Structure formats: C-alpha cells, structure tokens
Image (tube, rainbow, N blue to C red; front, top):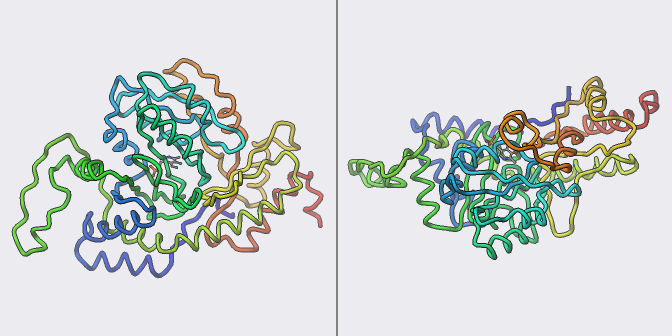
Length: 383
Ligand SMILES: Cc1ncc(COP(=O)(O)O)c(C=O)c1O
C-alpha cells in the first residue's frame, strides 16, 4: 500500500538522537535552544519557542494575545479542529467563516464581514501549505487593532512574495507532527517578532516560571531557584525531539523542492480530468505541498467515497482534505447551525493523495494510473 504520508528520516536523524541520548540531557535543554535559533532564522523572525505540538502552540498564542471569555476569534471552518479548540480552551468564542473554494483558505471578505466589537484576533490558516491572503489580513488586523495569528501547521517552507509564512503574524504556530514536512513525530513551535511575547511564551510552556533559562549552571554556579509567577503548562519539547527536528530543518529546501516536483507531475497527469480540481497555484507563491489535495467537483464521473475506495483497492492510501469544524458533532450539538457551504463542500469532496519525500517514480506512476483509471471508468487498467 502506498501511504498518504511517510516521514523521511536518514542516518543524520539517527546519529543526532544517539548524540542526545549519550549526552545525558534528554529533556528540553541545549539542543532545543539551538533548534529554536535555527528555526527563527529560517522563518526570518526574531524569536522561535519550541512546544509539544501545534495545538499547544495555538493555545499559548491565545493566552499571549490575552484572549478571554468575552472575546471572539475569527477563523475558517475548513481547518483541523485544533484551530478552533485553542479558542475554546480560553473560554472565548470561535467565529467560523467560510473559505474561498479556489484556494480552500479563509475568505478575506468573510473575515472582514465577521469583525465585531468583541473580535480580538484572527487565526489565518495556510492550509496544506498554500498561503492564505496574509498581507490583506495583516492590513485588516492593523486597521481594526486585532492580533494576527498564523496557523502555519502545514506551512513550513511556504513563501509569499519572498517572505516565509509565519513572518506576517504577531504570532505564528507550526507543527512537527508526523504528517508535516519537518517532523520529529510530535512537536510544534511559535514564532513572534515581539520580545515580550517570546518571554511570556517561554514562561507559559514551562509551568509559569519567571526565568526563561538558567545560565548559572553554565558558569559553574548552583542553579537559581525558579519562581512561579503565573499559571503555566508543561508544553516543552524534549531535546530528543529537537535533535530530529534540527536535522529535518536542514533538509527543508530539498524537501520542498522534491514535493513541488511530485505536485508538478500529478498536476500534469490530471490536467485533462474534468472536474478534478487540482491544488491552487499563484505567481509569487511557493506552495510547500504539505499535502496534495484535490477536490472532486459535483457531477464528476465518480463520487469521493467510491473514488477513495477504488484507490485503496489499487493500493493507494488517501485521506479526506480536512474537516468543516461547524459540521463536527461536538460543534453541531452546542452551537447554532451555521451555513458555510464552501467549507462543507470542501470537507465532503476533498481528497489528499500520497505526498511525501521519498515517494518513488514507480509509486507516483501507480498513483497517477489509479486516479486516471477511476476517472475514465477503468479502460487504462488494461493498457
Ligand atoms: C491547520 C492545522 N492546525 C493545527 C494542527 C494541529 O497540529 P498538531 O498535531 O501539531 O497539534 C493541524 C494538524 O494537522 C493542522 O492541520
């Protein structure tokens, strides 16, 4: 079976893990500090703070932005539910808006229409590695005094007019989960241009202590006791994870180049399949293709369910693109019903095809042949 995603680890990651294990320091420590510096340089933002996942990064972004129970936060419905849950953790109200079907990202017009006196922040999701209209959202936030938080879970390696995704927001949140381009199994990071946010985030991720890092031991002195000055969490990333993520980050340029090559091959092969909407492209944008997601338009020769089953029978794994949060049972049972047709349609009709570093030419060919055969009613299977 060709998996939909597969992490791409080499001897470098193995050696880096061994080094950390042998060093005797496996909790968050010096390797994580180095990783943070390297990650902030890659994004072009002064600070990066490593945490245990993008979900915990989004939670801390809410805390840092001061989002509380009287506040609203605007985000797209078509996203992984973690984006909305982070708002709920703070007792605030997620205001779900619809997406632009051409990009599957949040619609700027819908965001503008949803701004109220209670709005505190906008979470701009760069879904599947294709950037949302982040410059326009930045302008909107500046005009209304709102925080811009980028959910860049899928967007390491995404570039917009020469600027990396994650460098536009007051805060940006990244994922190191196994399905992401740079991975260490589970993990995440926040980036921010603001010194005060970085200091606060370092305290919040580590039980609310009043010091980011104790340097006394490095000077041969006894460590200073930490004091707990706020309610904090244990959202730290271990040095074992950071060691793997560092090696992965070094490969980012090559990883994105390979993914773009695979996407190009798929795009060309599916060009004549009417009703199979390929991922968006835009001049001036580097799509990192964390996922390669197609949408089966209504009236196409085959519906999404049988399409995915047919691919599975041909040995090709798929997943849905992602969820329409407003249609998930938790949401439906608790909130007024919302009419967000584009999000609902995308959740129902989007399919992620295999996309990962190391996807061989043979397996790319098998994916292409299986998709084309199902679309054309199978005659090519006999060719
Ligand atoms: C858009 C988006 N936001 C947040 C997350 C949560 O990331 P993590 O699994 O690192 O918590 C995901 C995970 O897939 C995601 O796709």
